[in-house]
Amino acid sequence: MVLTLGVLTMMAGPFTAAAEGQAPRVAGVAASAPVLVQDPTEPPAETPAETGPTIDPAESEQADSEKTQTKFIVGGIALVLLLLVIGGRRIRSKRRNAGS
Image (tube, rainbow, N blue to C red):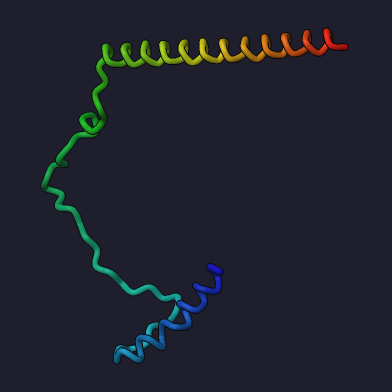
């Protein structure tokens, strides 16, 4: 699909340019564009050291402790659910064996 679209675009290029009254473009030849040059006399606005975010160690420790607390809570919930599944299977197997 992409190849077909590319071929159609290249084929339609000279026809649309001639229809608009412009000189037809040759497919595959890039037109020259103006080049923008930075003024070498101006210093850069920011130095590379100032571009990054500043990280406060206290905020980092607080985020780590919150993440650890969340992991403990999720682990506890998973443990409770596991115990419920194991207990339910044990009760079901006892009922099945008692009925036999």
